[in-house]
Amino acid sequence: MTSSRLSLAADARDSILSHAREGAAGDPPAEVCGVLAGDSDARTVTAAHPVSNVAAEPRVAYELDPEETVSILEAIESAGDDAVGFYHSHPESDPVPSATDRERASWPGYVYLICSPDGRMTAHEWTGDEFRELSVAVE
Image (cartoon, rainbow, N blue to C red):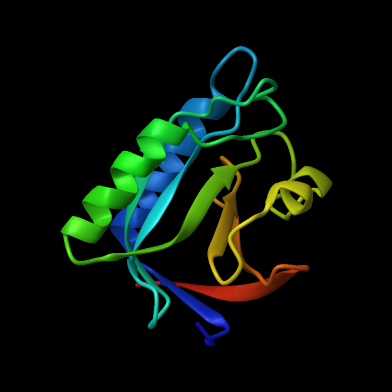
């Protein structure tokens, strides 16, 4: 992946934002997360697959449920698509990588999309050392 742009299908964006708003409406609010599917070479996301957040402190962190994640990754591959990356929400803060996000990022070359319930979102590629911001084009 070399593009500095992420192409995000409108349906995928809507799914991510709906999921983020569900998490933000909880008491207490919680981060939500999932897997982004599409074409990794073109850095295009055509679908977002929600995954349960099993973090000990879901209000301020996310951890993808391992079994659900493996199942979704297998389904994406079986459909002939790629796992482009992951998404999660920040229900009470700006959609930028937090210190926790930086500490836990572990998939170099993959996209990490962060959104807030108000519709703002950012995308970043994890290089293995840092997040490199990508522009997001909704199509």
